[in-house]
Amino acid sequence: MTLPIEKIFSEEPEDFQRDVTEMYKEVAQGINGTIKTYTPTVFGSTSAGAANTYAYQYGLYLRQGLMVDVWVDITWSVAHTGTGTIYVSLPFVVKKTPSGVFPYLGSVDLGGLSYTANYTYAVLLAEPNTTRAHLVQCGSGQSRAGIAIAAAGQIRGHVRYLGQEQEKL
Image 1 (cartoon, helix red, strand yellow):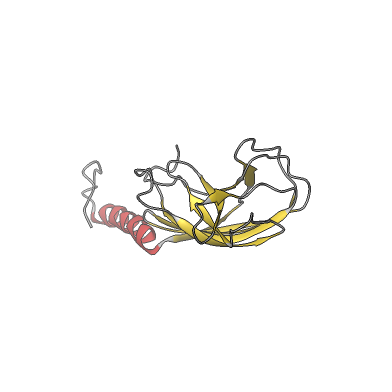
Image 2: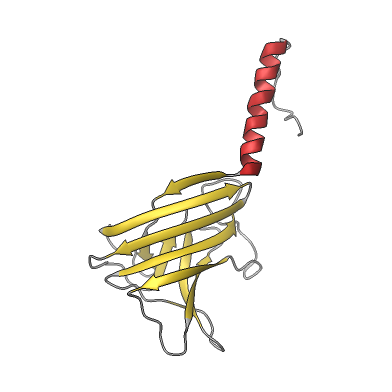
């Protein structure tokens, strides 16, 4: 562990011990990770839509240093007013990288959402320098394409990505 140069330590042994113990706790938490819940939302790519009524919203994340694992379970049953393709909110900003360097893909299980012809599965694609993941459909010989937002649907899934050091845009 490297001691920070901006920290002024007390010369009193008990104060010094307290300061070092607090620093150690922060470092250990960063290495071991933090598991917390958050409330994921669904919104459209063209128009986010008004606040929707969700039947179920649950998000869980594990952050270990810059690595972030996110699990979501979202069900909406009242007509969503968003337009375009589906995005899911993420708890931390995705690290900004050159386009296509890290795909940040995650797996999903869908309910009430349809694939277009020749597409057979979907993934969550965390987008660099944002707090969102795009729900895209994939298929053999097909390029990725967003899935249209529907009046009702369910998304259960996981995405892993590198978070930025600062958590805000």
